[in-house]
Length: 410
Image 1 (cartoon, rainbow, N blue to C red):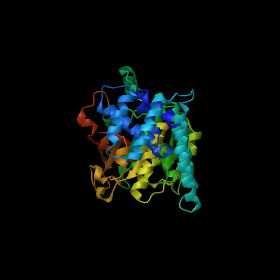
Image 2: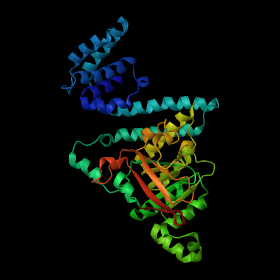
Image 3: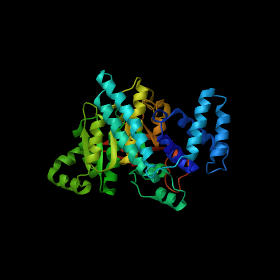
Image 4: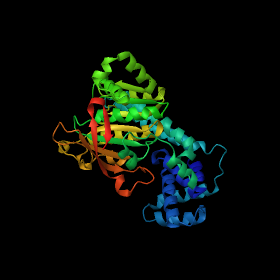
């Protein structure tokens, strides 16, 4: 099996970049890992070379490793190189990489099962590993989707492909349409208007899609979130809502087509339960309010647990639909108008690394003020075609109309 791997990776520089990422050191011989690492260095050292010549590569690798390995190890490495050079592949050699992915996860799952047995883990972690194993095998099988096309028109099509426009023009100018793969974080202090912001935007986006908007709620009571959605969709105060329940329900149903699904998890939702819902529902947009409270990840430190959550959320965005996640701002943001990255709770974690953009919402210390202050702390998205560079990380003063659960541009 090791020689099938070496054969595949030796065929071209492109093959090496495709396959090596799937081959973990603990599922192949030590010599195989040394050769694969050597291939990467070889192609970097000689950038003009696109195909591997075993004779020149072997001489390069032995010279390189003679400073690191013992004489016995060098002998084993020479034998591996000689056999790899003369290896005749069988017809199913490409399936080997798929098998190596499975073996890697099998080892991890067995280790996790031992932890469950000792009371140091639980079956949710085993489930996560098994799910990730299937996803990685699927990604390998559909290899061509892992690489960015070199065709400029194809890239342009992806960039200009349709997405969901925001209700607020300030966000359309800075961020552009929200597309599958986008993972975005909204941070603010309590009672600033995070739920109102979400309701305001999804009530605008729901009319742009035939898919479902899934709102995973572990912050406010679900019925309060539901009322906010009714207000935002209809642009009504609560008094107006109650004045004609039957008519308002019909108008709401016509506008939303029962596509806004609110899942209320008072105990802070388990990612296992969320994944089950995602598999059985076709999401067009996914909301996590609040993401830092999600359960299902265990780590030695809180920052490592949060890192796992954000990495998981990014994969969800890639696999299913764009993700908007709400997070708490730190105490330093209390009473501040323009929130900076260091005011985002957990900013020293992977949060800022995994998110495509992070929006801080601030307000004045005067609780009667209708103004809210948007500051885009991070932005990897494109924005409108005429967006100036300063707009991508810009700020905007907007108005909140809490009585109808909407934000408006000034």
